[in-house]
Amino acid sequence: MAASGLAAPTRTEVLQLYRSLLRVARQFCDYNIREYTKRRTIDAFRDNKNLTDPSQLSAAFSDGKAQLEVAKRQAVVYSLYAPKVKSIMDIKPS
Amino acid sequence: MASKLLLQTLTRRQPTTIIRRFSTAAAVATPPDYEDPSGITMKGVKISGRPLYLDMQATSPVDPRVLDSMLPYYLSRYGNPHSRTHLYGWESENAVETARAQVAALIGASPKEIIFTSGATESNNISVKGVMHFYKDKKRHVITTQTEHKCVLDSCRHLQQEGFEVTYLPVESDGLIDLDRLRKEIRPDTGLVSVMAVNNEIGVVQPMEEIGIGALYMRRRPRIRVEPQMNGGGQERGIRSGTVPTPLVVGMGAACELAMKEMEYDERRIKSLQDRLLNGIREKIDGVVVNGSMERRYVGNLNLSFAYVEGESLLMGLKEVAVSSGSACTSASLEPSYVLRALGVDEDMAHTSIRFGIGRFTTEEEVDKAVELTVKQVVKLRDMSPLYEMVKEGIDIKQIQWAQH
Ligand SMILES: Cc1ncc(COP(=O)(O)O)c(C=O)c1O
Image (cartoon, rainbow over all chains, first blue to last red; front, side, top):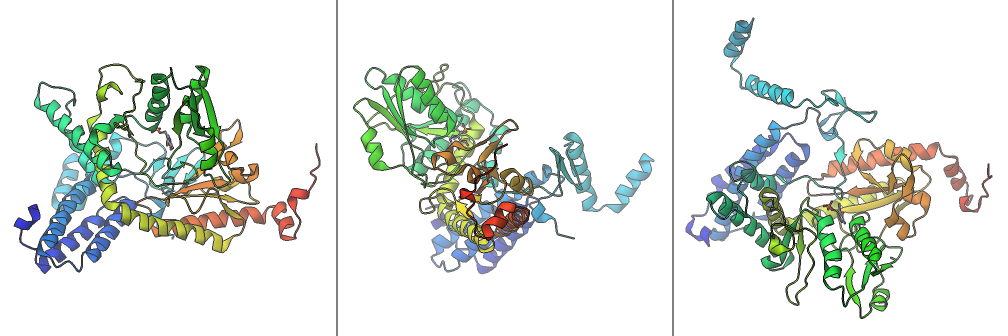
C-alpha cells in the first residue's frame, strides 16, 4: 500500500534505527518500560532479519521509525514524573 | 550570593546541571511525604525501593504507546465529542469513532455494537439489570456462577429483591462450570446466563485484556435490548447517557489495536514467565497448590496456596513484591475469598493463597526475584512452625484433636 512508493532502507539505515531504538530504551527511567523497549526492539529486528521483499522491508522500517518517535516522546514524559525512589529491581545489592 | 550561584551555573554549563534543576522543580511541585531518596515508609513498612509489581489482575500499567495516543486529547484536542457546532467536537467525535472501530476489530464485532461505559461494573449492571428489566414480562430467571465478580452477583441480588429468580451455579474444584449442569438449569423463562470469560482471582478459562475503562458489546442480530441504567443526554444510543471521555476512549482503542498486534508475542512470553514462576517455586519447596485449572487458565495468572504457613505472615514478609491475597484481610475479619471457597479450598489454604499477575512488562529477573523472596519467606515460616515439624515426621495433622479452651 503506502509502503510500495517508498524505497527499501539500506543496511546502514536499518542498523541506525536499531541503535537509536536501543539508545532511547536506555533513557526510560522506569525499569519495566526500559527493559520492555530493549527486549521488544531486539526481538522485532530478529524476527524481521530475513525480510527481503522491498515493500515489506520499507513497511517494517517506517513502523520502526514511528515507534522511535513515540519512544522519544514518552521517555521525556516518564522522566518528568519519575518517582524519587527507584524500583527494587534497579537497586544493586551493596 | 545569588549572583555567585548564577555565575557558577553559567561557567559550568553542563547539561546535567540543567536536568537536575528541572527535576528539583518537579519534586517541589508534588512533595510525596512518604518518599525520600533512601526509601519509602508507608503503613509502618519501610522498603528501600518500589516493589516489583505482580498484581496485573488488579490493574496494569498503561503502555507508553497508549499514553502517547491519549495525551493530545488531554492537551489541545479537548472538545466534547457530542458538540456539533465546531471543530473541537468534530475531531473528538472522529477520535471516538476510530476507537470504537479498534475495539470492535479486536473482538470481531461491528463498531455499532460497541457501547463505551466506565468499566466492568457498569457494563455488567447494564447487562444483568438492563436485560432483565427490558424483558421482565416474559423472562423471570437468571443463571450465573458462584465465582462471578461482585458487580454481577450484587446485580443479581438486586433482581432477586425485585422478585426475579436467580440460580448461582457451583463450580468444580478446578473453578470451571459443568456445562451439563448449566443446560439442566435453563428454563423457558431464563432471560440471561451470565458467566465470566476469565476469572479475576484464579485466572481460569480464556484470555482477555484488562483495561481501566470499559466497553460493552451488544449483539445486534438477533438484537438484544436493555433498559438504560443511566438516563440523560442519550449518548451511546441512549444505552449509556453521559459524555464519552475522549482521552480514555482513545486510549482503549489504541490498547485494543496494540493487543491485536502484540497478542501472540505477549502470550508466548507471559506463558514462559508463568512456567518459570511455578517451576521456580516448586523446585525449592513442597506443599504448593495451584488454585484453579492449570489447563484452562489465562497465562498471566498464577494463584498459589502454601501449606503449613500463616497467611498474614507470608504477605507481611513479601513487602517487596506487590501481589494480592486470597483472603480479604480487613482488620475486622479474616474472611477467605468467596471464589476460593466456591472451589472447595480449605480455609487455611485459602488464607495462604497469593495471586501472582504477570503482564507485558514483567521481566524474567522480576519473576526470579519473586521466586527467591517467596521461597525465603515460606521456608522461614515453616522453620518456625511446629505443624510443619509434625508433618515432616509423618503425623497427619487433620487427625489431631485440638484441645478446646
Ligand atoms: C472480573 C471483574 N469484573 C468486574 C470488575 C470491576 O471493574 P470496574 O472496577 O472497572 O468497574 C473487575 C475489576 O477488577 C473484575 O476483575
